[in-house]
Structure formats: C-alpha cells, structure tokens
Length: 378
Image (cartoon, rainbow, N blue to C red):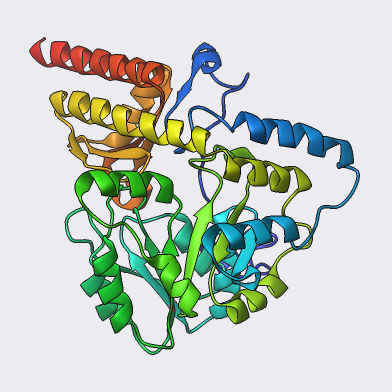
C-alpha cells in the first residue's frame, strides 16, 4: 500500500481523473506537427480578432491581480441576458460554476441526478464532494426526462442536464424542459448546461424547434442555474472562462467557495471583446452547420451511424471497438475522442472543424476503411 493511501480522502482514492488527449509536442510521433485535433469541441477559427487585441492590451497590466469579482464582465453579461448582476457568477470555465454548485449543495449522503452518456466531468465534480451521482438511462441517444424525474429522491439536491448533450449532441426542446421543471420538487436545483447554446439555437431554427427558455426561469428566480461558456463558439477554451446565471442567493453562497483571483485579467478582457463580436460567432455557427452535414453524409457512407447534432460535434457509432479506430486515426494525423469512458465503447465523438480539417479526417477514415476491406479479403 502506498504511503498516502490512508491519508487522502475517500473521493481522492476512488476517483478517476479526466484524461485529455495528448497535446501536439516533441513527445509524439512525427505526425504531431500536423495533428488535426477534432477531439475537444474547440472553435477551429480560434478567438475573435477583437478578443486577441484585448488580450494583448491586458498583458501590460499582468503584474496586477485581476478583478476578483469580474465586475465589468458581470455587468455586461447581466445586460446581455437581461438579468441582475447578482444573478451572474463568472468562473474559470463553466465547469467552475458546476464545481462550486457541487461544493455548496452536496456532501456525503446526498446525490445529484443526470443521464448516462452525458458530460463526463459531472461525475468528477459530484464525487469530489463525497456525494453520489445517479445516472438515469437514456431513451435512444436522447436524455430521458421521465427517467431522470423517477431517479430523484429525498437526498437529491442537483439535477444536471446537458442541453445539447455531450457526447451525443442531442437537444431537448423548450416545451419538454418546461414540463420537466414543472415536475421537479422544490428541494432540487436544476442545472441547465448550455455550453453549446449558440450552435443549438441555430440548429433549432432549422429543425423547427424552440431551443430554450432557460433565462425566463432565471429572471423569475426559480431554482434553475444556467451554465454558459466562452470556450466553444467564442473560441476562448485556452483561457478558461465561463459563467452561471441563477438565483442571486444561491450564487452568493457559491461565490464564497471559489478560489481568490481564479479568472485572469486576460481572460476577462478577452471575454468582453468576444461577447460583442457577433460576426465571429455567426461565421463559426454557419461553418458548423455546413460542415456537420458534410461529415454526417460522408461518415454514413462509410457505415457509421451518425446522430443528428445540435452542437459542434458528431456522435458516431462505428459498430466496433472505437478505441482501436481512434488509435488508427491518430497514426493518420487526426485526433478524435473514443467514448468508452462515457459507456459507449463502439462510438467516437468528432468535433466539427474547418472544411480542410474535415476533409483530412475523412480521407484518413477512408484509408483505414480501405485497408480493413483489403485485409478481410486476404
């Protein structure tokens, strides 16, 4: 037994850590210099030029601590979403709000409820508090709201709904969420994780759906917290900045639990500039819609079952071991996410890149399929 096994907490002993894909670097193969990363749902166009300019300006005051309360950004977000500043909490990524909610509301003997095959960080945030995470079964590839309601008990304090869901990309419409919230007991706070909202709003209009009325609940002071991020459509994943919108009292308790100066001045400046560059977001969303269709059609022709997406990635069931395929693709210079850790060993998640990135990926997938076909005939 190791020296510290009996000294660390039970969650630390039992939890598995998040396993990101290895970054390109000298420790990888010669392909690493041109590795096409389609594994982390990043914006392939990078940050807004206005955000880059704001970051460069902020560097001159990097010797000073940042505004711990993110006051200017909070006011701007409050204005942008038509809520009170006290209903906005800015953190290092939207997962920062998630972690603070879990620390504030959970502990041993309590639980949170989510769906199977949903955002893998939910389990980490919940288990770190010593609480239990209950995963309700899905209905096909979509969250089953009735099953989630049935999983609630007297010890439930949080419900975690990813909309669109990561990794399946499926979306709940506003009416279904309205009905769900109407049946949720008062001792439970519902977290609506809308990290991919900019993409979902666009897809919803194409599908003839209404995506979300989540902010109406925030304005009414309901027991709902909405998570948003600058990591996806805004292209600021490397800066780690996101926020939550919810009841002022609850977010006030969460704010007491956060680390001091957890959001850098550079990130705050970039977020303010990115929020106002709607042209950059529109370009990102338009490329995403166009390339989602290209990828879905071509991957379907290769025999994959591709779930229609409302986000910036595709869930692809390949019908066999996905970890092996991901390794083969990496050898071809493309990184995708195998989903065995999500309970889907036959599926991969492919982020939607630029046309050039996607064509490189599709060519690699065709090469692998062709080699497998030749091997089967030999």
